[in-house]
Length: 232
Length: 256
Ligand code: HEM
Ligand code: SF4
Ligand code: FES
Image 1 (cartoon, chains in turn orange, yellow):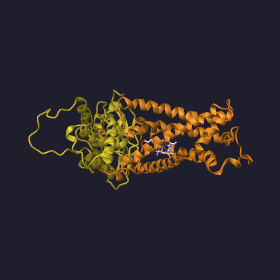
Image 2: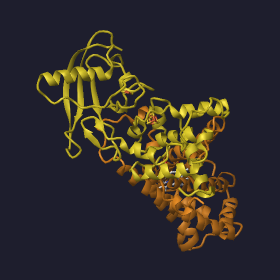
Image 3: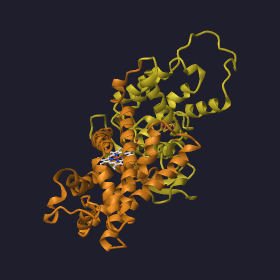
Image 4: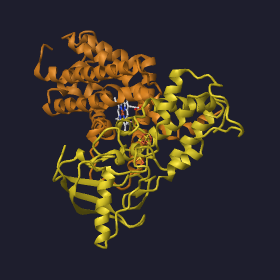
């Protein structure tokens, strides 16, 4: 047997971890975005809260949440390691390097885009995840808001949070980072896993571009629509 | 594109030896013919320096016909200069304009230390090859051609990978100084042919291990290598190497 143990410490193994965790995060984004789109379809917020309630109570989802957090952590640690190792591989920089001649700026800036995403995640998780899972929303406005169906009203929390312009701006900017991170990352992970094919790679690339635009756009529309009161 | 002769300003990296800190030095060259190659322009400059009693600029070159891969120069921010799919020796001065300033640096990578001026030590590549980039056969008479039938598509892909001249442009341009394109070409040219099969999974493990040990960076799929490679080596080779590597580590019977 080739040794699995030392496979992950090699350059290709490290990339495989990056790719697999990245793909896992992409699948999470899909679910997260789908559920959040309930805000666009129900003014009362009952539908949205039901989704949130399901995510907070279903044990399969809760278990996946642990996996998700570990996956994210692995992605971040490995990403930081890759970035530092790669900088060390060129100790003396070029005086003149025309990177744009042969690659996209966002492909060369995955560490920076990831760091911006991490900063956003700190804000985002403390806005909603910490509130709904740990501290509870009863501290909100001095009472525990519940919606018409009796679920805790995360929908109302969201409206309160997105009444602040700075938060709307931070969220929208973060979605630009996400879009560019994915614009490289989506197709990249398939190359990392060894899937490069004359017929399928162009399809994967187009899918990646569509995903990288649609998902962040939908996410960005949520705070924008709430802030400007577009039909919500 | 110029037709008349040109006067140019060169900013060239000068470094006495591996330990020296090195610096950029400005030179003027006059009356350069647009039909000269970039290396011939350097020859003119060096003649000039020697006449003046200065130390000529040391740069690597050998075949001057685009096949040996020696002529490593990072010109105006790109390996082998502004043209796609050429080496420095095949780059002509007509690609520049009268009055241009041209910046010339050596390949920059921890695994390619500067020996002097524009010459770097690329023996890291040799050690990667020595770690497995060969096939073991008993010597004797050459076999008949076509003794081993090889499908045309397979033979073509192997030949395309074998076009790699080991120039190091991929490493030089990669933001991570990764050698994945080179190593994957050297692995693919054998992995695609029947003669390469017996050592296929051992080879990929050993060559990747040596590549890592040499201090090249980790690939992040920016694609810069493929865009700058003078021989058009494709990223498909990297994907193939990754596949072979996973097979070797997770499935194969062979230890690296
Ligand atoms: C929802 C969040 C995120 C998603 C969906 C995501 C997705 C991805 C994907 C698909 C890749 C490509 C993997 C490959 O090429 O094989 C990747 C790479 C990377 N990510 Fe993330 N990522 C996320 C968050 C982060 C965060 C928070 C960081 C923070 C440090 C980060 C840093 C990186 C780095 C450094 C790379 C490596 C660049 C490369 O290999 O090309 N990512 N990410
Ligand atoms: S892959 Fe291309 S750029 Fe890299 S060493 Fe071979 S010929 Fe040069
Ligand atoms: S000198 Fe041989 S390839 Fe340029």
